[in-house]
Length: 404
Image (cartoon, rainbow, N blue to C red):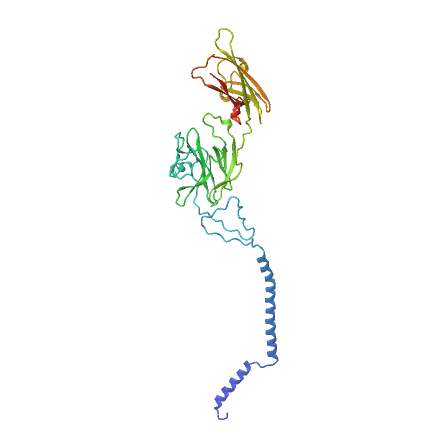
């Protein structure tokens, strides 16, 4: 080493002292530093384990429970598939920040009367029977106030508006009709618009022929269901309006078509009607003196088989000669036209009882060359002189064996 240059020796010594001061040996200071570092590492490990012990039950509990509190992921902005009418609406999350309102992208199907009349529309099929091959269904231009047969007409019933198919937009409900005689077939139709704004047909709500003969009115509820007021008959052809019975039936869109969801499904027997049964006896004798005519005495026995009283009875077709006695004197002298112009209107028959009615005529001694048998009938009338159909019309009619 003595051969080294004094300056080189000095630099090597400085370097050795610097290295020694940086490298800690296994002394007390190093032991304390190592112990403190191990304590910090142990504390960190304990804390991490505690966090795991706390979080693990929470995660496990959330996995076991139904995750109702998690806000749903918003659906894409496409036309949604409507829920069936019996499906309840999806509840909104009760916690968390409110979801932003989603604007419907479906076209607005609110259509005015003038717009519908100006368009050509496709209609669902009309009722079978008289309408087959009659009213058109494709590219129909609706008309109003027409008496033409087999022409589709827009009825006077007010339109209804509401979200029928659950797409978030409004659709239109209208009544259309088609005359096939004195009466008309009718149907309730739901209209909408496509994305180009054209009027299209969503579907038929209901039509006549499905257990009833007339449609009186419609109303769209807030839940998208359609209430239809229907009638069992369509007064026409001389049928009085008071015979009509009405019901309200509810229909909803199920994703493919409309179906009934509420209200009665049939009318059943009319509780206002009764069953009158009539039998007849007769006697035909010569008139004394020079009169060549003969005296015909006819006795009608009328039984009320129920279920309601008949305040009056109306006889039809019994005018077969000159009146000559019996109950003719008790006939209502001026029966109302509502009793269908009966030959005689007399006090009626309570339920479960029978009454006899006698009519005397003077008739020719010989029948005419083209003489025919006469058919007699009796009907139930109320206190307002209104006649009512019989529940079993065949047994309230009889045929005379005598030709007149």
